[in-house]
Length: 164
Image (cartoon, rainbow, N blue to C red; front, side, top):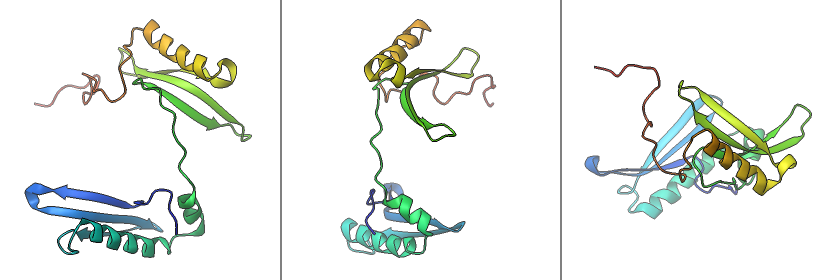
């Protein structure tokens, strides 16, 4: 089977302190987890271990129901990114199956709760909706940080006391 993601169900494991290097296959079939580790050393190299892991994965995938196979074969769509932390492109469908697209600004308020504002692409156009989301962030006092930067609040939970 041809996958849109060639390493579907396969993860790389590198633990130098434990001298553990290889590929780990995990596929769930009818609620049962099937997993197996392919060590680089056992298969005389990284490439050979990956090839064996893919062969094993393919054998497992043949056991999947038809609907799961069809979803695996579909191409993953490219996700639009704003480049700004907290601003994302969203595509959704209503109950009638109509597709809606919008740029969403999402943030945590002073109360610790999540808030968001949506800007329709149909109503404003692609560029204008993105600009409105960024402008909204500035109006509420949120900084426009580049995506990938760590927030000083990351890892902290609002309203909870630190453990002693």
